[in-house]
Image (tube, rainbow, N blue to C red; front, side, top):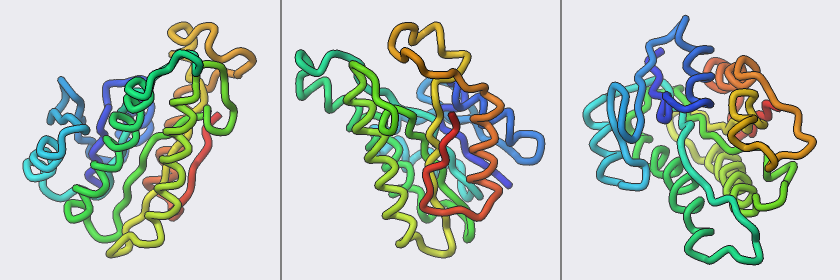
Length: 199
């Protein structure tokens, strides 16, 4: 299969690429590096990327940022960061990419553990992750041409434990290999409309 991985250079993206690359052609995409560059918040950029690439068999989104901070001092503008970036960025990838994915192909979005296991300062991330899950469950019943759509919901990766030190008390870090397998399940399997937990 020819698989587009957006956010391929990130920690989660690298896990997906490592798990899938032995059997598939991977097209790496990112905001500033990769085989193609794309800004998921810019519809014209997403459309241009697809036009340049042509048809693919699967699209994986491992990109998007959210705001971490205390709820009591969070501004609406800060909250919108996750909505505009991680949520709408990934939805843009689906809405603008439907005609570029071959019949029977798939989209895999990325949410995260915080909507099912919240932590302090994570309200924005939790809301965005929950919305991604709701989107894939609903979108699955309307996907044309046998297309499938799922989300992978990774826990705190071992590689990211130091970066988020103090934010995830009591969370057991998960290996990148385990997260990678969740992307394999979504792309190579038959599931649709599912949130695949990995940690």
